[in-house]
Amino acid sequence: MAWILSASAIFLLGVFKCRHGVLMQARLRNIFISCILLLALAWNLRAHLPNSNIDNLIDLSFHFFGASLLVALFGFWSAITLLFIVALVGVFGISGDLVETSRHYVLVSVIPALIACGVMKAVQKLLPKHLFILILGNGYLAAFISTFVTGLLIFGLQQIFQISSFGTSDPLGWFLGLLVLSFMEGSLSGMLLAILLVYRPQWVSTYQEEQYMNA
Image (tube, rainbow, N blue to C red):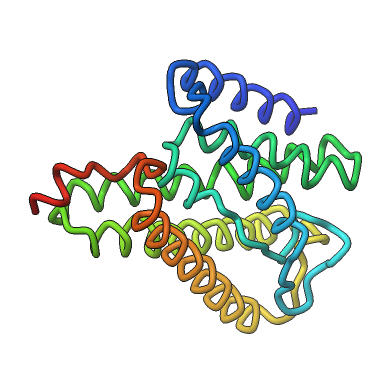
């Protein structure tokens, strides 16, 4: 019940925070629907780390989170609002388990989005306004770090609470696998962000043309 209440509260807060934001723009409705459907599909194409429990969606297995990319495109609050719908479609729509859906939403949507948002703010504050830095920071670094830190958090939960469904007898292999998966997340997010900046820059909320083009 705690997972469901937490997920619902975060979603409602997200709806409140972005009530005047990009989610209300009718011109972007098709891209929102596309993001939801594509991410829901991607969430069910998962890579499993060594000796992970493949029967549990929140175990030592990972998919393309997409949280960092959505934050770069639409902002933090809009991203976690969309990710809640992704969780309903991609997890509840298949398993029918609200607890599992809520847990998935909190652990591999809200937490990576929060970390990615922090990375993007640090990049914007500390590094010069350059298009390459925007792609590298908001695309690759934010996705890599958010995935890697989330993986470490899940591993920490395993160690602290001795959760058997998180169990692994090969920590080194798991850690190396996490590095590879984080690299894949960062590479895919960076590539997609670069493509969108070229063809649909108006979809990228972290991009301000006057600042980056003048630089």
